[in-house]
Length: 372
Image (cartoon, helix red, strand yellow):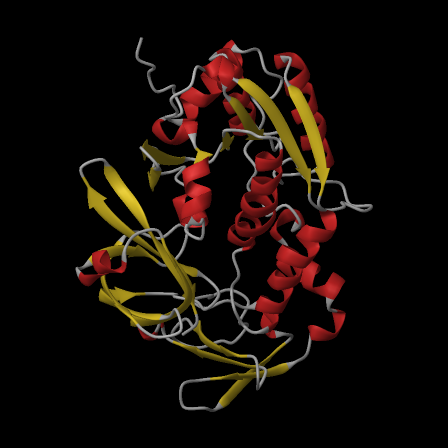
């Protein structure tokens, strides 16, 4: 009798398939664990303790807090699955928080969620799942993956408002072939509905919105905690190089920012450039924000280079739209991206992620980090 592919694309019965589910304590990953358990897989839930809240009260809008760990434990108990907690505070501090702080000090706008996926989640957790002899690592990310044979392709989720593919562009091909994302073909309402049917305690839990180690979205407080010496006053200049004001530290600004400049002009002013070497901010009118040419480095490609010979689609921020572009590959794993139209507020430290529309959806081709 011929064996058929199971629901995660493997030629094994679910009862003979071990999966590790990354359980953050939220409704998405908890629902995924429940779905796998219901389908008969041997499920091991793993929750990561990534940072210490200290004396601060963790917001319900943050992920990976102490409350989240307790919620994940309750879900695992409810489902009757194995559950482990890995204490990765030091790894997270070195791999994510330190880089976040240094990036802001260089005048960039970092994306710690990409670094978190790249390091502790899809590297260290990947290794742990392999050690446990799991057949796949499963997460609650809203991206669609299609596995055929030995290759897995990643696509934007059908729920474009929830799509998280931008944050996963740095996933390696090896990791992608081992990862599965069951929620990519579902809407958020469907996820909550399944959680309620499974009678999970997190079914109505609010979504996490803040970066886990940034309470209430206050980036400056994180920088102040780790680098209190970084709040240095400096000049605010216009495009002619004239000093028109003073700032309290470049870490308070990002490219495209309008509020907080505190300079009165007839036309609204926007942050156009941040020079960390000179501790200066350059401001000007909105029409000067538009850019068409981007330099990126540290490329990660999920496809053969020849696919980039034609025009593709790119995203230059997580909430941005898809833009038509041409990518010219350079030496040292870098590239120049030429947009077909001007785009405002492109900032160093953000990612430029590549996409291609095919018959199955909008496929992720890879991407790189914006440097200029």
